[in-house]
Image (cartoon, rainbow, N blue to C red; front, side, top):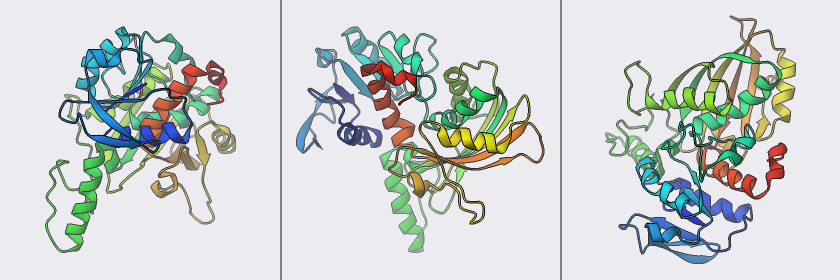
Length: 336
């Protein structure tokens, strides 16, 4: 197998998870741009030398985990697929392509088997959201969703995480933080997501959530509105979710469904006012859900709060779970 983009935050997590989950790797190849070629990574206690990506590099490769950005994936994923590999791509390059499955294994595992060589890994915030929506929608159809995200620096990569650390020290030392990775400093600050704004006033990240959720859950008419915010958290995203159904949904029933849902961890203590936090999920697989309550303004709506590790379940883990699903189709029955 090959990892395309192993030096980034998600690539590093992929390497770690391959070991943790004992994924059956016969031979591992690390591919990157020519400028990174020759660098050495450590994997499974052994040095792993980065090779320059090329069409020839995919000869004999069965599986490619790609996390090197949309332009790189557009160039190399079709060539890898043509060489006989299955590509699980973490970029946005193919997510809305009707010929490419967009998969969250706990939500739509069957879609993975309809691939033609490329499978798309969804956007991080979409993965976390659909894990909470799917169990509820399976019981009572969802009519409308309004979500606000609180996205950590990890969503912008390893350099953004390091910049948050550095600029936080600058502020604490009385200096003026100047960001070079993000458009504004995240140190003791937050700002609306910096992905390109569209003509309708929504940014690209918000529209990803809309369009990808519709595709994954096979609800093309789903009414969904998102507001995405970057916050000064190193790792793990959070979301405040308002879900309107076509009929009332008892809170106790929703809580029981989410507590039993694969990939979800119920974390709530109303007496102690204790609900999911980014620190609860950092470095862990489950998406923590809590503060499930009746919307006081709408008898057909519920509200909940969730947190999930963006690098792990929001990216690397989901990709590896897709690969595991392909190796063991029995997981499509819900055992992922």
